[in-house]
Amino acid sequence: ATSDVAKSVLQPTKRGGRGKSTQDVEEFLKAEDEVDERTADTLREAPPDVQQAVMARGSLVGTRDPSQVLRARIRQAQGDAGCGGKSGGKGGGGGAGSGGGESFYYKESSQLADDGPRVMAPKMSGGFHGTSVQAAHVAATKKAAAETQREKEQEWKNASEVAVKTGLGLRALEEKKQKEEEERQAKREAARAKRKGDVAQKEVDDLKTLADCEEQAWYDSEANARVKYEAALIVRIATRFGSSGAWIKITEARSRGAEIPLDAKKVYLLAHPDKCPLPEAADATAILNAQRPPEMTESHAATNTDGSKAAVAARIAARGGSELIKMDPEDGQECTFAQLLQKYTGIYAEEELQGYWDVEC
Image (cartoon, rainbow, N blue to C red; front, top):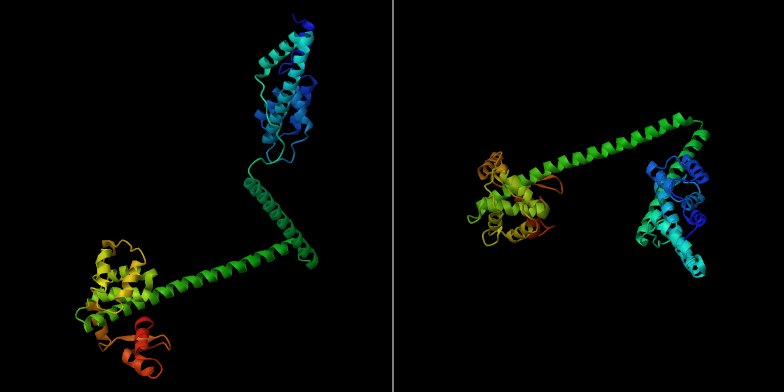
């Protein structure tokens, strides 16, 4: 049987009885006031060798998360202790052959009862553990944060030097910076107002272009009995506004009184070359196929009748004639196609002027 003296020597110290080690732990935790209570209790309940290994690694001041760093140190120290215990067991095994086996068995049993089963654990070292991509991301983040901090420090240093050299003082310097910020804000507001004005002007231009399409479609339907006003209007809108705005403007034309069907397939059929004999019908069909049509519902029903065939005819008659008048973008003057031909006789061919009239004017 193992003697009482051997038991007292070999049996590990129970958790809670610390002596000077307990005093050292409390002094260490008192200095590390950012450690949470749960982590502190873990260190208090650890074996003395683990406590000494943890405290030997130095202060936690300056770490990002002191509690997490302390828990990592405790796990590493426990792993180191586990490795040492296993090799010590082998030495004890040798002692068993020379008569010390009973003492070794009692020590190992009491350790298992006190600390639970011991397992091999890899030795951990400080720093980031992950893939190379993750490590590169962490390094880049730290570098960016450090650069930002340096820029702020340099900016403050420069501002202080300017204040000293010019005699402005910090308050005057702050006022100057505030004035510069107000000037930048004023420029942003001016740019925003310009964009808003550009948008408003574009809406006006688009409305005028849509009215031109309506009048051109009326002339097309009057010149050829096989051409329906709505079919010609769809063709003119598609060729004038292109794939990015054709369907939107077709919807607007319907809201202005044009009898355009709600079904997109029927819109395609109206503009198809087999149904519409206009030369531009093939191009218009390709343009309409280039974009998915919006869903047109009764909510887009006519809100006025400015775009109906009768309203367009009345608008043309009120102008004093049935001949279409457009604005020549070259000089900004309104004219008929006959007047356009006369203006550019000898400069452009009639076919070129017809295309210019249909697309540009």
